[in-house]
Amino acid sequence: MNTLKQLIQYHDLSQQEMKSFVDLMMDEQADVSLKVAHLVALSMKGETSDELSNLSQSLIETTYKERPYLEDSICVCGTGGDHSGSFNISTTASFVVAAAGLKVLKHGNKSITSKTGSIDILSALNIQTTPIKDATEKVNETNLAFLSATETYPIMKTVQPVRKSIPTPTTFNLLGPMIHPYHLDYQVMGVYDETKLKIIAEAIYKLGRKRAIIVHGAGGMDEATLSGDNIIYEVSQDEGIKHYTVNAEEYGLQSAPNESLKGGTPEENKVITLDILTGQDHGPKRDVVVLNAALALYAGQKVDSIKEGITLVESLIDDKHALNILEAVGGKVYDNIG
Image (cartoon, rainbow, N blue to C red; front, side, top):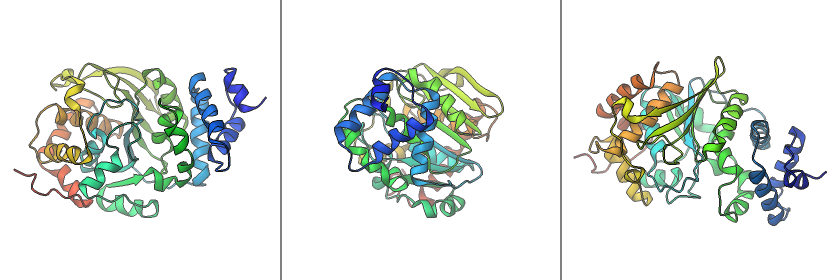
């Protein structure tokens, strides 16, 4: 039975069939409409955790026979696709996480479903992405490197026309954070679709992360938010998978609606990030960065609890250590310091 027929009949794909699926997606000669049909069929069937981990592994192998490894490496990023229009929360949090001593390899892209993707705000901040061959050196120097998905996986450009022609998020929205070019120790992965949390957690476990936090934000965002209970799946190679909720108010942060986290153009989002890191903003935008960075420090075993993480994050921002990281990777602060 061919792969498309399998998917339409809601049959799960084996590892070999998933490899054929990837071969089709990466075939520049193949008809875009055929690729669209396969991708929509997989997304409609719903992915199993085996399919997701096999798909991730096959995609990684298109480009990396062996991925580089760096101790204490972490990526903080979301799937996108939540259409919330929020500012670049995980990018801002990355400066703080690096200031705590974790090796942050932030894998990002230009915007597909929002106004400003992580690569867009970096241009506004005057920060260059790092080629994969230089990333280990860069991270050892500054604790932070930004990797562009189009540079780490040039082959993925063959999928862009397919993704752009499907108005809704697809399986590929889930994969961005999962196909990181490094063999990561730690990860925080935000997921817009609550129904996918469990299978993503299982797939991340199978992909070998030492510890990871998979989060679905209150109000349907792909980051932890301040508006209610954030759903967490905590993945650990030692302890398996745990499931719980985190509410910002329980940690002394003010509750705030998701609308208060709205961003805009790359230039506007740059100002938001700088206002937080220079200590000018003490409102919900700062609080949401504090919460997400704290989750990352907990995932990365820098702290023993989320509460301890929040205390550490606040001091890293207040003492300008996170701002120092931004400047160390080439960011221009201009006159944002009051």
